[in-house]
Length: 413
Image (cartoon, rainbow, N blue to C red; front, top):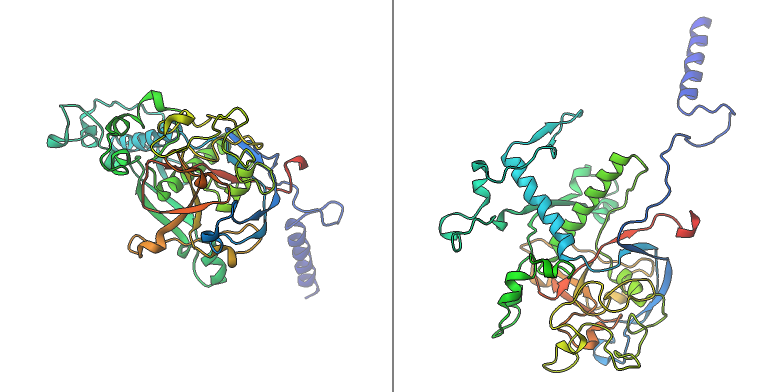
């Protein structure tokens, strides 16, 4: 019996040592953790943590209750210095296109975990008859051209419902909170015709997304779901690159900004600034317009842009962000409620609601910010909030991404 006790004691000591061995006998934490030096994403600028007063930027009686005055705090984040451009979004489209082609050609490889994945080392022979189904067929062809059927560009993105998981308190399996949605991600180029009755905009419909002349212009014709799908793809692309390079981890996702992250960034560190450049006027001392919008009735080109302009046109604000007013309005993540300011929290305020396709239209409203090339200057103000339906595409709505900064300040590194 004594020998059995000694053996049990030895096993207990062995377990204790193996579950967190410390040569000093002290609590030192796990020592083989991955290194973390922070990241500096290409094309993004750092927006530090801070506070701001939200509410109307002007004497706006009609919106007094839509934009109540309130002080809030925002955590630091990175934000794209420009709106996502046609050429940047085209990288996503080409990835989806090539994924379809590889799938048709059976270019797969099985990894060490037994998962089957596309082998990108294979070249795509676009003349292969197997790919014929990717092209328009029969009467759908125009002037005999061999063109890829963009209706096949369907991409499934995922997100995690953190709010529902928190309320559940561990009662349900994890997959109950993993949400998935399939969406056609090719931009709706016909918005240029649909948005304007009795107006000749067919050249924009034909050329805006694909022609090299517009590569550096903001992508439009993308709805809220398509913007989220791009963000998900961008996250996967970044994470795969990090794994290949083996230089640390990143658990945060590229995403749409909350409306108050957007407003905070738009002000560029200027307290209560009605416009990204400060204000209160929309012209500088020389009389030049400071953004791309509609300066007067029937007057679109006075600011230098008949429609949109390049994503880095005009001067950036003090954070280095371009076109936070005008050019295109931008999707944000929250659902739109008229009285949201009266009940949302003052720490990183955000209101989410994932409306289903068959929900009432009023449930599908998402906040857009910034005003566009076809709006009057009121919508350019940093405090003005507006909305569009999440499944709606417009010729004047685009987006940009943010990435939450991990840590107190960029100066900590």
